[in-house]
Amino acid sequence: MSFLSSLAGSEILIFGAGVTGKPSEEFLQSRGAIVTVVDENVSAEGTRSNLDGLQLSRFAFALVSPGWRVDHPLIAQARDAGLTLRSEIDLAWLVKCEIAPSQRWIGLTGTNGKTTTVQMTESILRESGINARACGNVGDTVIEAVTSAESDVLVLELSSFQLEWSSLFELESAAILNIAEDHLDWHGSFDAYAGAKFKICQRTKVAILNAADPEIARRARELPKRLIYFSLETPSNHEIGLVENLIVDRAFVSGDAEVLFELSDISPTVPHNVLNGMAAAALARSIGADSSAVGRALRNFKLDHHRLETVADKDQILWIDDSKATNPHAALAAILSQPRVIWIAGGLAKGASMDDLIKRGKSRIKSAILYGTDAPVIDKALNAYAPEIERVSIDAQLRGVDLMRAVVRTAAERATAGDTVLLAPACASMDRFKNYAERGELFAAAVKELLHDRP
Image (cartoon, helix red, strand yellow):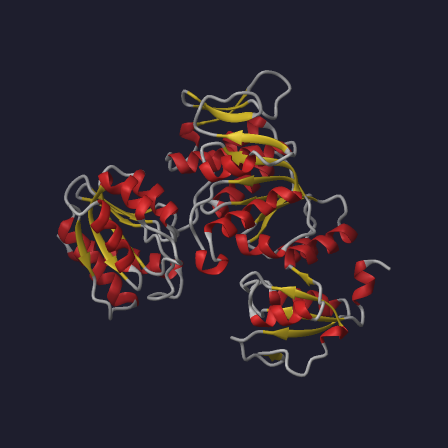
């Protein structure tokens, strides 16, 4: 019996009623499955908060939403009962194998730059005439992408959480952009976090890797796969790299080399974004995209909001919203992209160390404006490695609009011609804002309000 046929009348347990849980529930019910949803934080009708009274042996399998930790007591209970645990990605793969067997999947992970690079890849493929769709941790869930429209290629953005729970899907090619400390509160250690990221290499024919990332380089030695590297250095065989102002492909070529794009084709032209473009080009080229399509697509590509987004440029002071910089690695890249910054940072550090950020970024930081729960973590690192940098702590009682107005006012008092006021928090936002988007929007609004009031 096929997987889809087996769903009719089967009982299936879903952990999580959120972004992946709900569309998975709807799909399974459309195929005749009897679905039970468990979520401790949701009181919606038909959703349970525990497994009490359930005969777990009745369930065909359990679908685990990516936010659930592997050591969660309810997950442990299901595992101890012998229940097969699957991810939404694996569900989508099983469905894809039946309803779209010729569809190809490529994927990408990394600590930072995932969404941007997946969207770049989608743009390059479409420019090359390939019907591609970005999904996963961006846009639609994978189950929605598989079942709602016919796409020849799916470009999957995969988080460490999604990779931790997945074991069935197969990719034509997969890229890892970078690996730095993040989500240590969820994974328990950096080694576990990096290991989850590298699971993507178990599921692919070709691995596309950042040659300059030390953790990637260390783990890549153990990979038996075909490896393609990208970097800002002159490329050797099987690499994509930089020759003067040209990005050159020596990996997916029949001859010696082909030019993919010029540095001027990508905006902003900062190192980490150029690397994003290289990874996107490699993914697209791995499944047949034309080299000529890469530059055309990247010239027209625009970053999403809150990613090195210029909010204002007045009196030779640049105001930049990089609210999506939710970890130290991303914040450091933003700091290094500017010559002199008034740095706005704080929130929830998720267990990450700020030491490397301060050591490597201190020469660019003129002042640091700190707020939020883990402001003391940043302050401690500044004390240890850059005590000369001025620090201002914002009132811990402030939230939302009031907090951001105070932050912007404090930054404006210190900024002079040639400075960049940079919101690159290095932390998650949920202690003071709904999400990173609200944080960025309130920053932009406060900046515009302040500058409007000035002569």
